Length: 484
Image (cartoon, rainbow, N blue to C red; front, top):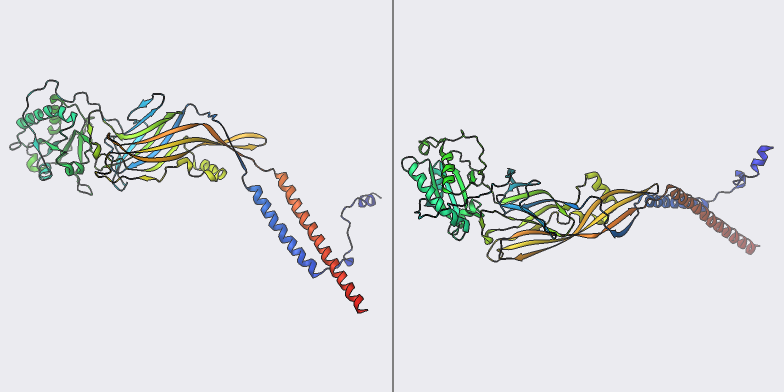
């Protein structure tokens, strides 16, 4: 009784198999319908798995404070690490010079290949005494060297201290009296003919341009200490030597020269003994640059206002010849905001493939200026307009922040100037931000569409089969009527 009542509500009443008739047209249509179902199901599944986003522009609602982080990795094939400086300024009056705490420098060659470990992790000592306070008449106590005799002198004396100078340089002229006086004192104490442990000489870089370029002299005056005993030849034949950054008055110079010869035997100029006994670290002495290039990497924090990051040759006690400074560079990285982990970067690219590459727009770009009279004194400027992009997703009717990223556009130009060439990165954060929202499709909507596809294709196929079958029957009846 109960079973008969249940059967009365059966929507899918069965027709005995003996009462059905199979046909080739029905079989073909069934195969086509099945293929159509599979194809439409695949398209619906692909649509369900595809990320759907909506984009809007709103006022910047940053939650990471008033400061913005800038990460960079830039290679300069012709700017020495000795004087390379990273400076930051903005429209509010902030002006930070020679940032070293979060910046690292590495010497590189002209092909951007590293030539050693990190260069000068600390700042260069500040020179307070640039010469003698009381000017006295002086006679030349140092010998002038040229490219013809420089190598012979550097091999002849255990310690050769060279003053690379320029006659037009203010600091070189301040140093000249104390340098000549010191050279005279050291010649009297250590006679070049009888003792010969140390000799002070000078090189005019306006006359010996190639010699100064060979030793990577970019600032004047530059005092180099060449040691015969620890003479190490590198790949290109250059010799390992030091730079002197101490005070420049006569008393300080004489004291420094005495430390150089303190542990060198008197017969050193004959025996060329190697001096390794003095292991103390003198902050006034640092390894001189062995190559002319420098890779600068690190990060700085700036305020969220228009400003500039400037990389240039800077020193408070040296002068620079603008025509000899080349700031050509290759940008490996220059990005804003927090550094993304590989997983977060993959998520960022997954959600917004059309933004890929704009978070580090300058990466891989080279700005090379071939040095010459025509291209001298060239400053390279980059103008960056920065926009924050925030990605959020809607999960269970709640807005969840996925990540924040800063995109920027870049325009670069080369400017001829009378001043020392620099590289400027002008940045301008936008007060607006781009909000990209991921709108996931519900699973119930996916199931509904799948059912609609199956039912719709099955129904349409049934209608087509019925039309085709009835059409054949009518054709047969017409043919039978004609035969009769």
